[in-house]
Image (cartoon, rainbow, N blue to C red; front, side, top):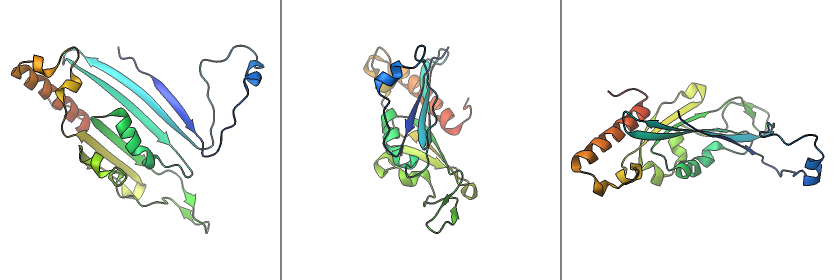
Length: 192
């Protein structure tokens, strides 16, 4: 059975006031194992799903990252950092503008920045590493980009040994299974 973890980080545009430890000691009972809070601005939530596929001999690790922001904080500005933090092979990036804001003349704006593709916010050096496909619904302000690593080093996927210890047939077989797994995730369908 897969084991994963979930983490939420709350973000504020302004300073955060810390509660002195003395006040925490005054709370009745013991401190809870988890805390639910409301924040006026933003959050980042990460859910991880490590999985082992014994019949295929492949292990995968999935991380779902939800960045919800308002105000001056933009999740598009965090893309480069998030992509490189996870050193990912396959990415599905969704960006949706919800609600509206106002310009300086109080006119309602349902989108207040130029965007035709999420790729516009990914550095060229990163885009060069991936095959990318956009599926956008412009009139709904929904942007979707799928990314698949173009080339990979098999040694990054082996446990307990390296590719120099494998026969050419083993290398071809493992590489083929990895590519199929990546294609299935990238295209969102079984490739049998």
